[in-house]
Amino acid sequence: MWSEEVNRIVVEQARDLQREQPDLEVVQDLAGQIRLRGKVGFCVHHEGVSYRDSYQVEIEISCDYPDMVPTVKETGGRIPSGYHRFPDTDDLCLGAPVEVVRIFSQDRTLCNFVNSLLIPYLFSYTYFVQHKKSPYGELSHGIEGIIEYYKEFFYLGILQVMRLLKMLADNEASPLTACPCGSRLKLRDCHGPKLDELRSLLPDKHFDSELSQMLKVCRKAKLKIPYHTLQTKQMLRNQRRAKKGKRRKVKRR
Image 1 (cartoon, rainbow, N blue to C red):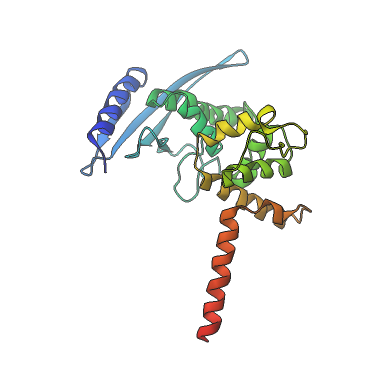
Image 2 (spheres, rainbow, N blue to C red; image 1 turned 180 degrees about the horizontal axis):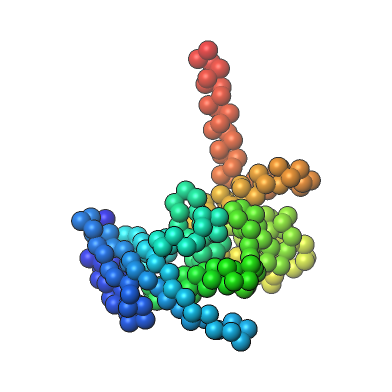
């Protein structure tokens, strides 16, 4: 349910955004859900060239705002489903989930969401149409893109990345522990600060889910990695539940 405080914050921020994007209108349904609909325009200077364009969008705001990042759809039919959109919701994929949260958390306003996340995405598509490539480089779709993001964020290979994500998923990252990247340094003197940054953005279960998907990708690719050492506490609990469920079915038979 929408609270009066959330409603006040959204209305105030929407007014600020409309000063920059006057073609966006605020729409509120009977349940109190607020959306912003209309045209978002931009002028981006990239490598000495100015790119001007505009797109029809619908920005949906959750009742947990500003704790939750808004979602957005392109409603003008210009951006195809194959270009970084979530197939189940049709929302635009503005980046790796943790990176989207990281950028938005720096300034939890609608102006920051549009200027720092939405417009770079829209500009990237405009640039892609003209040049058949992305202006900033491009992550793969799905979990493969998330793996690429973490490898770049930590400057590590996939095995070391998964070891760090296991620390986040299990919420076990003592600063005096040896960093699992293999540097022989203590965590506090190596990748600990990066783990602290990620931990502040998303819950343990998010990293558990991503690690689980990574392990499936590795198994499918038949990579030789120590899977048993990368299983999180939640994964082991799920396995025990599954075994108990199978035993009960056998007994019933």
